[in-house]
Image 1: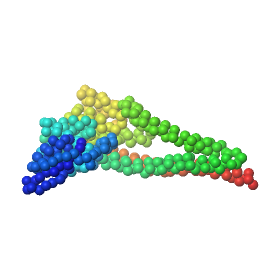
Image 2: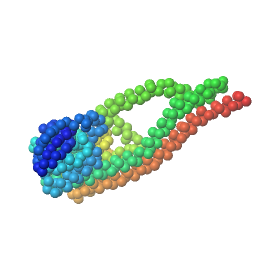
Image 3: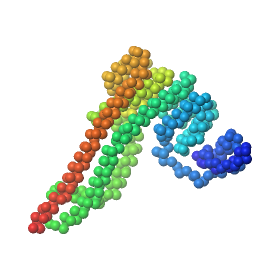
Length: 402
């Protein structure tokens, strides 16, 4: 979407130069005329010509989206119409891609669509949970409160993701620097020792000979190795887009002893929190289940929930139906059963999510505290073996020269 440089005059005769993002010059003219300005000229601003955005640049950040919804709630409570509220918020958005989305939203709403329908028309940009929350708020006539609940929901998810990323940063940095160190040793240091040993007639120990041979092969074929790694990464990215591949990979993740508990409990937590949000918004249980099932991050676990709605239709209650999925823990099932019997299902589902969020965080902290020293010890042993194999023949060479 291009920028336009506009010269306008106010009613007081003041001349203004403004830059505005719009789909066309006609839309730009309409925008300033609606504010009562007299349009003197509109020209395309070629200085702000945009380079096509990369795929990862076309995402709306969680913090931006939360801030947008906070402002939307405040404006709705203040009595502003939806269209006017979006127009006000759009003016302060810095993210060009997000601003373009809001412009398309304005067009959809002006065409007569509701807010949920306008967001739904943007494809997969916005989550089904958010769109369902908007729909529930529109049906109940309490849109602001429904969006506020979604903000709390999204904040919890964002905070959990941020904690996991922060916890995993140090081990991954440590692992990355370790591989760089090993690459430098194999590519530059050990070949120097190989040239040094070539000037002597002493036999090298098998471990040294193997390491020197491997290092020479790596150095001689470094471009081929990098090309193969690139080809493998590209092929893997294409391969894992298939649904069956994702299900198989997620099944393998569940075979990792300690990671299985984290994946299962995160699935229980996200399912419970999403279902609680939708039920509290006034959406029926059957309508909410499909969306809540898609919130489970593990594809294999999602396949275990595919018959959940059918079992509910056949008269079974939620706790008994979840038992058939065979991954909900007894504690979660008991809490959901209590919620059903006390007519407070959405409240008890929120409690289930809180309980398992705390358990997941504890497990992740324990995992990171164990992973870091394991990486250090492993890399230390590898480097020690490499250094030993390189320096050990020197003692033999000294004995031969004596």
